[in-house]
Image (cartoon, rainbow, N blue to C red; front, side, top):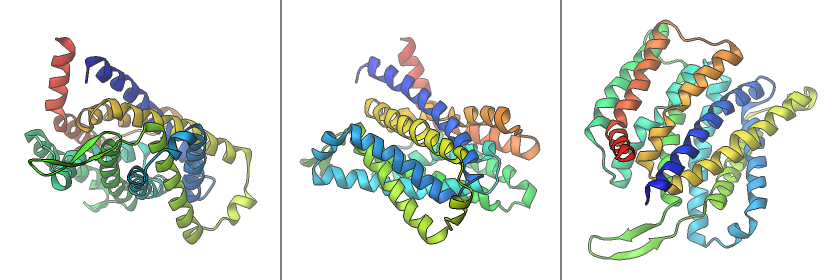
Length: 313
């Protein structure tokens, strides 16, 4: 992989973090006027259908293994998105929620080590207790008991970490076999078809859950142009564009390098939440978020240091 590909991935991922932050605003506006799981379903179905039309011939060319990989990635991401949107719906500050969700960056190398025999540096284990202390400060107001919304965001972070790993593995060629021989080659799933199938899977799963758990009568009675606007903005800008760009960027990079860039997202979200909703962090919440951000930096320090050395060489 040449330096040019790394730089391209960096630029794309910075754009992804900004689109992700904007998506928090779109989603918050939407769940104020419609059922949250229904919103997720419509958002991802529309985005997935758009990308499926664009990548129809590419999707048709997928073999069974590639299709299975893409659907598996989608299932994990669907679980994360359902917990995430319920966290947004709970009323927890978007700033706090974004930092809690960003803990997926800390969790990625841990899960990669536990389930996929990845390498975890000393910085990973040093970052974990700092992140836990940060969580402690966020729960000070409730007597060291996490609020329901905070817990939802934390569970979402676990699924997002697993999604990130599986997404990277699906987007790249992998050798499957023993120590001495390669038994099989896991073909990478092209970025457009991988994104389309993942988003459609999320939309279908969220739709089923919404049908079972939510009442849709309020949508019919309170239907408005605002509702349509936020769904469309979330679907096409916050979802289709964002996740296609992210998947393409990850195909140019590696999981460990990619998550370095992703630590910017909570900063963007906090700034946008402050300007859009007038949110502010103070007291224990501010300390907790700062500690969580510090854990993100520590977690990826060795990778960041190596990258900067390479970029300035």
